Length: 174
Image (tube, rainbow, N blue to C red; front, side, top):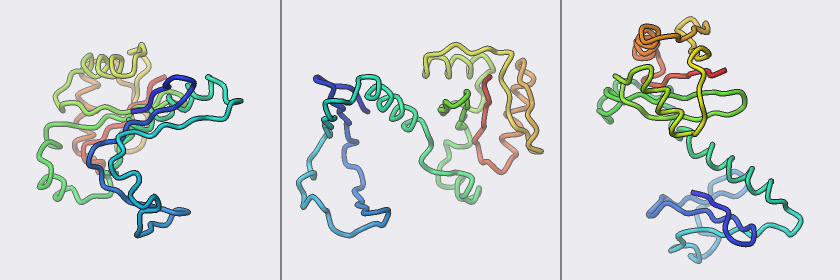
């Protein structure tokens, strides 16, 4: 989580017990460059230069929020039989990525969620109002198909379930 703290500082909260790996110029290195100074750190505090405006800090905070919603594991690259063996929840859930102009995000929802349910999930999680008339997905032939009602939504879910995406649906919001 990231937030703007006092005096225009950016505070990033770290995940407890995360797997530490260190990189230099994009190459993983073996040693800890901080010599253990960050071993018990729970957050990082960044102090920007005095000329950095609050608008820039808000933009950075928003970018971190968008990054957090992205999936870190590309499920499409995994063997679907391994996915079913290793994570039985994927049989009952799907990851819905959505694209709204230059914004993007994602939510994990039950497979049996209704059309209204997915709209409410996206609206409540990302705090914006959707136009139900302007929602589309790409089918197996990579054609854009509009979703107008519950029947269209069921077809979209069926195509996602039987595609090579292994439970990942892409929605395009206009």
